[in-house]
Image (cartoon, rainbow, N blue to C red; front, top):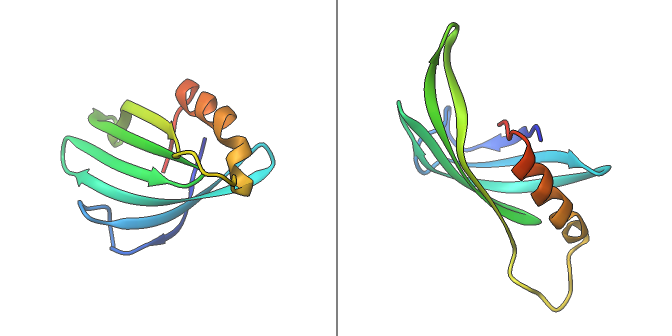
Length: 106
C-alpha cells in the first residue's frame, strides 16, 4: 500500500522524526502519524498510528542505483477496543491483511 507524505518535521528521516502520511484503501483515505524510532545505514524502524497501528522495520541493502529498503518486520495491530468505533476502523481488518500480504512504501 503506497503512502503519500503530508508533513515531515525534519529535512530527512532521523530517529525522533515525526511525519503525517496518507494512503487510499478501499476507496477511503486513511491518515497515519508516524514516529521514526531508528534511521541509520542499516535499518529504518517506525511506528505508524491511525485506524490501525503498524510497527515496521526495514533493512537497508545495496542496490545498483544506491540502496534499497526491504521490509524485515511489519506488524499491523488493531487499536485498543473503544466503545464507539471511528469511521476508518471498518477498514482495519482488510487493511491488516493487505499490509501483511504486500509491501509498504513511504
